[in-house]
Length: 335
Image (cartoon, rainbow, N blue to C red; front, top):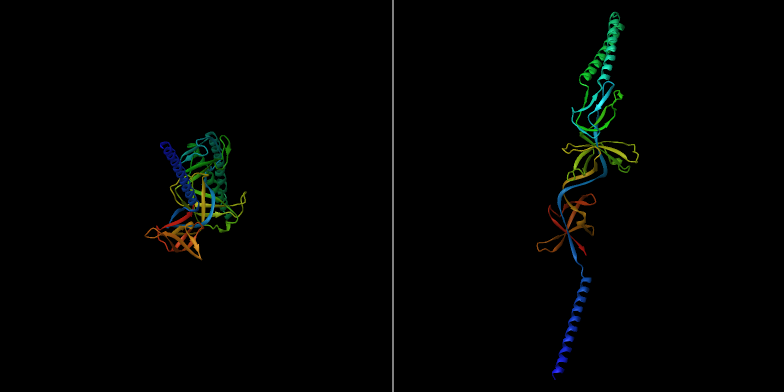
């Protein structure tokens, strides 16, 4: 009797296990099926806020420092340079030394030229009775004055045989060569850091939308958190080697230090509206020709709100009515 009862208990126990496993399997199956049929909503939020919208021509450009040359009034020989290409200089900094022996030779030639001019003036002054003679005297005097000025300039070089930077900036190029006689060509080209410009190649399809004095804004990696402004200075109507049209921009006053060749991202402004209520176009839906956004009511439930939009750049729109600054817009994405 006891043995029969034990067998019966074992059978019941195994049956309970089977039922438990079957029940669990059924539960998991139903849960999986429910998960397959249910749609989970993920929310994104957009804020209506005051800002600006700009429509323009986007392009890439390069900083170009306004160039100033350092010329000589007389042919000389550079003894040595004290700066190199790429060096930063201040106005008045020493940039080169001139060979004094060459200066002395030039001075000797000018002294001979001056003596000849003096003799010529004395000769023509002996015959000054006619109008023609008076004109000849004036011409001879002007030539003598010009030679005297040249003599004075070369004497100054001999007393201080040094060239100095004529502006703050960066040495962009050195045209003269050490030990080689030069005439009046610039010894150095100095980029004026205080007057940066931007050269922007523009596609032919957009060049007719560019006008002198058109406003621009730009950014550069050297100052990632800042936006700078400027205007169009001039545009070329002959394409460059790449088939684009070079447009030169001036930069509005700024404390930023731009360097030659810096890359910039430019927007030439065609139309712009500032101090307007803006909203991402991703938050706006169109139903029966009307525009709507979703917001939560005082109970937290979603509701449709009709709005009216105005100016847009294709990504952000001006909100003319229906919202106020700071309103939170909800967009539901099915996952």
